[in-house]
Amino acid sequence: MLPTELLLAVLSFVDATAVLRFRRLSKAFDAHLQSGFFFAQNRKTIDRSTAVRLWFLWPAPLQTQFAAELGDCGALELSHSNLIGRIPAALGRCAALRLLFLHGNRLVGGIPHGIGRLGQLVQLNLAKNQLAGPLPAALGLLANLEALNLAQNFFSGAVPGELGSCTKLQWLDLSKNLLESTIPTSMGGLVNLRFLLLDYNRFTGLIPPVLGSLVHLQRLSLHHNNLHSLIPNTFSALIHLRSLELQSNMLFGAIPPSLGRLTRLRTLDLSFNQLTQRIPPELAGCIQLRNIFLQNNLLEGSIPDSFIALVHLEELCFRGNTKMMAEGETVLPAEMLRVFQYAE
Image 1 (cartoon, one colour):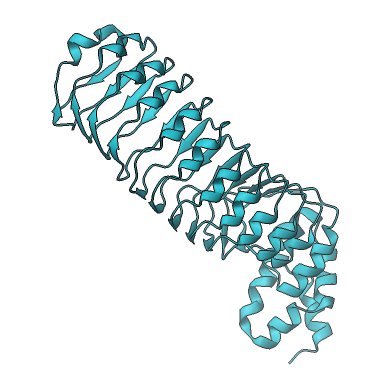
Image 2 (image 1 turned 135 degrees about the vertical axis):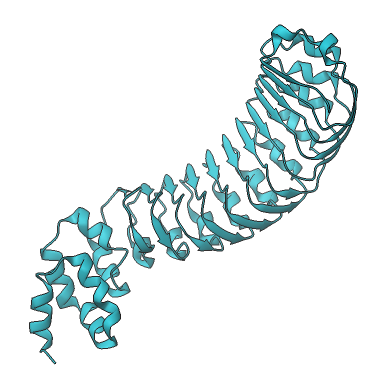
């Protein structure tokens, strides 16, 4: 067997990425690659940007050493960098970070609990990876966070209630994961939220009425879950809302007439639910509506005469409501709509 010093000297001439793949050859070899000597030699041969990418592959002791080099780093922009491996547990030592963009890679594992030590973090984007496991409660410690994007991963379990402590959040995207249980009522504390995207998960139970207190919301997307709920009347307070997407759940009861107070609403999608009774004429108060999707519910009657006031309307779909009367042609002039789909 070659002496350790000679072995490591030889490895110092090999591409750093290739060297780290040799860790699996033996435990002894792995021990060599975790040594401070190898780190020092390896670090001399690569620039800082390469070292940052390799950080996700280094053994934990070397990750900790390199984190010390990043102590004053305010931003890590590594999106779409073909990163593999896990998010280093030592990330929590980079206390100066304000921006962390790791989206569009092949990262696995979970979010390290040390993430809660990044008290200066303003934007965190881990979307489009292969991350999994529960969301750590430590996310609630990120008091300065304004944007959190964890979409298109494999996160599971319940959303931690602690997330409601991030009161500066303006953008929260947890869509396209495997999250389940109920939507936590603590989200009502996210008083500065503009965008809330929870679609394509496995949420169950009621839509929390407290979401109606998020008066700055511009988009609320809860579609493609297993929510079994009335549409909360409190949503009438969302006066800045432009898009309300509740399709493909198990919503029941009547469409609240109070939704007609949403004068900035442009898209209303309540399709593929179990909504009943007539379409409320008060919806014509949403004077900016472009798209209304009501298909595949249990609605009755016909399109309200008041809809003639929706001069911006481009698409109205109500097919699949077998109890509705196909009288829409006499209610809405054809020139108002590019697409007008009648009940089947």
